[in-house]
Structures are given as structure tokens and as C-alpha cells.
Length: 394
Image (cartoon, rainbow, N blue to C red; front, side, top):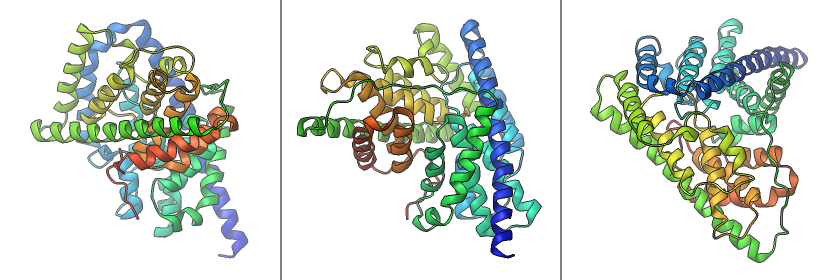
């Protein structure tokens, strides 16, 4: 294949995958919004959590033995390719996530978009009889397109897809493919009329030695909370696997426990994505334990087998934690919320650069110095534990 033909071939594949991924994300976000609105107006549906948990568990147990690994399957297939990811991963994760959100499970959405796009992208391996190296490019393209379109952050999506694999060589090699896929998927998603949340940091103080000291302190706290989240979700997974041998029963029993808690305590704001709380963290004082309740609820919900993702709950944890740090860190509330928003995510996924870029895309260049400090320090203090157990360090 000549160079011109090769370039044309890859542009063709990227545009097709980006279009499909952006469309899948748009449909997913649109239906997710409807599911969330239905849950808010019919809050009693939360009592169906155990039933949905059982359904999701049975679905994966009988139809998705490999697909149950979620994002980890994409990472494993990248590092040690064994078989093309089955297209059924897309409908499986979509149905499971929609059901989980309908009943208020505290899960995210990026895992769904990334897995749908990754499964779609990997199908090209079959159709075009591609090599192992070309397949790696496809998996990166899929992750990039899914992440970029679900959050409306194309640059962060492109960098996340490269960075999550921890391989410098690959990051250079597939850089252009990843960026093109992210932008195609992002604009396709927008063209379907999807609107992403926007956040504002109205005031950013100049960086003095005092402010640098406080920013570093905030970063340390964000990093420790990232570590706590990743450790907690792995611990809940281990406990569930050790004591409940039949996998579909894990989300059923876990769902029962959540429903009991819900009955006795007002937990509405911690259910589902929690987007209103994320927005509120930038403008008004939050309850001091919001971040901790969301942390354990999400770690538990994902640990016992519900589907979705980790990233939006990490935004919730980070933004509400940043919000309460104003009690003893003299930086503006919106700035601390924004720093936490991306820094906890950086620490929990070991994707430093993607989170810095995401902070700049979401909050503008004005707060970039503080975002960089928070993400870097959180990344260093998170102990390199990752929410993705298949993540490899090189």
C-alpha cells in the first residue's frame, strides 16, 4: 500500500468509526437524560435496584462472559491481543447502563461510551483483515472517539486514549489518528443536538508563593481521595467475589443494601450521575460529607457489578471535595471545585495530561496553572493505584 493510499484508508476508517461513535454517544446521552428525568419524577423506581442488579448480572453471566470486564477488556486486548471484541459488547453495556441509571445506580457514563466505541472500532479488524499493530490503532481510535463525544472534550479524549495505555512509543505513533477520531466523534455528537454541561470559574487569583502552597496542599488531598476511591472499588469487588459465588447475585444483594440505606437516609442527590451537585459545587456551599458518601456509594455500586463508568462520579467527588476545602484553603470556591473535578480523575486513572487538557477545555486557560498543579500533585500522591485493574505501567 502506497503512503497516499494508506493515509486515505486510515482517514476513511477514522471518519466511519468517529461518525458511528459520535452517533452512539448522542443516542446514549439522549436516552440517559430521559432515564434520569423519569427517575427524578418517579423516585420510587429506586426500589427496583436489586431486580435491575439481578437482570444486569444475569445478562453478563450468560451473554457477556468476557464483556463483563468492561474497559479492562479493551486494555487487555490492546496489550495482549487474543480475539476481536465482540460487537455485542455495545448493546450489552448500553442496556445495562440505561437500566442502572433508570433505577438510580451511582455509576458514570464514560465506560459505556468507550466500550460501545471500542467494540464498533474493533469490527474493522475483521472487515479489512488488519494486522495486530493496526488493531492497536483501532482500539485507541475507539476509546478516543467514545470519551471525546460523551464529555464534549475532544482534546482530552484524544490524549486519554493514548495515555491510558502508558506507552510513550504508542503515544507518538497513533497521535494523529487519536485526535482525528476524537474531533470527528465530538462534532458528530454535537450535530445531533447534544449539549454538554458548562462550568465557569469566574475568579482566578494570581499565583503567589502562598497560593502555590495552598494549591499543592489541595492536590495532595485530591490524590489521597483518588487512592481511596480506587482501593475501595477493588476491595468491594474482591469481597463480592469471595462471599457471593454466583455473579448475578452480587448486584442483587448489593442493590438490596443500597435500597435499605435509601429508605432510612435522604440519598437522592447521590443517586445516578449527580450532575446537579457537580454544577452546584462551583457556586454554593455543599454538605461536608457529600464527596465521601458519593465515593463509597459509587465504589460499592461498581464493585458489586452494576455497569456505567467511574469518571462522572469522580467529577462529583472531586468537585464537592474541592468545594468543602474552602473551609481551610483560602482559594476561591469555584477554582477549588474545578481543580478537584479533574485532579481526582487524574489520580484515579493515572492519566495526568488528559486531565490537565480537560481542565483547560472545560474551564478555560485562566485557571490552567492551578489545574496543572492540582492534577500533577494528585497524580503523584495517588500511589499509582488505578480504577482500571488491567492498566500496565511501562
